[in-house]
Image 1 (cartoon, rainbow, N blue to C red):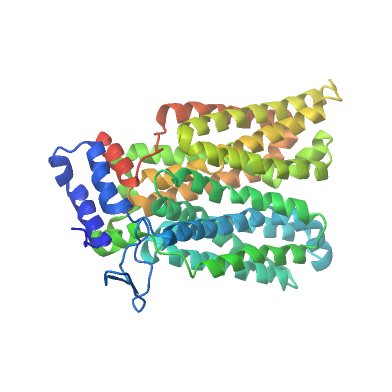
Image 2: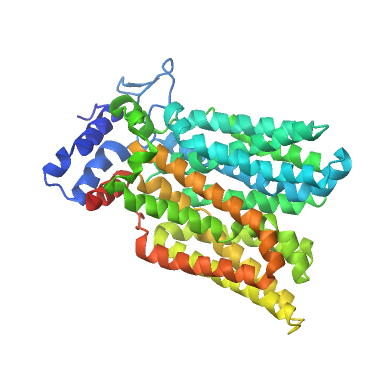
Length: 487
């Protein structure tokens, strides 16, 4: 049994679980987790060497394609760090992409002679690309694998930045922005799914939190340097993490869970959106989609896309505001990553949603005081505090944890469809918020943020009542406990 290949052993366990044999044996969830630990998590990264490469140990054993990396093998730690770095590079680039249009607006309009309408198309077409990327993300990742999808993501990123760098008119500029949106839409799905499938249960939350929070770092970095360099130079700098991603892709393995699924279960053809609405999956869909709705409609893209407008309207220097926000991202992200595997996903999500609620309330209150000419000296400071509280709370919780939970709760046979649905909902909500903000802000600056505050307050209740805790459990244990309860 010691010489049994991991993929075969894992397939045996998966097949037994799928067929109900394990349940029929009367095993408890803890006993199932122990069996899964022996068969799956002992060597987490498998099948990472090409067929023509083999490594021999002192006992004459060889490891080539399909061989497992032993848990005490130092390369497992190296591979895990490199894999996390790949996801971090892709999300960091996504953060740069998100804020690029707001930083480059004046320079592009002057240099290329674009009208306001043409630039509006350029700014918004990223969301269209992201929606298309979200639509195909689940199916693409299931059919060609997680690792190959990262190659496609990087291709879209590099192609998009190069198109913007060399653009002389509106068409190449729009093509580049659309390509960047496609890459970002794919990243939002494949990044958390890949990390969830390769990371040990005791490290999964922290590693995923750090990697996914890099989108905030990318946005902050762009805000810091975007005021001092040209729009072409900003696009050139945006290529740097893409090139690092390209280099690291040669060293990361494919997800072992996806390999076992493809080779042994072969149920990709059964993964359809309609299958998500079976009774045993409905609760999971409500949780996943609900978290995406709360994350999107809670206002993060308002603070990201329109931060300059918010600061200017509140009487705060945009440069000072950007600098303070960028510095805040570091401790907030570190705090979330260090606490997620200690206190759990639900606790941090509720704390984050409450912080967002408070931040939006304080921002709305500052505009209310400004509208009535009350406490004129206090209202700008209150607005800055509100923005900082919101973004800090978002960074350590609602920014990445919803994606972590979505990547954890869905079984692999419906993960593609579930991820596609959640990804689409996320980007659609982001579009709604980014499109309606200016209309709402013109209607009532204070009322706009009170609306977002109410949505975040509802998020606290939603998480407390419906979201399961996934801390410290393997993916197989999570799926077994949730689907058995709901059947």
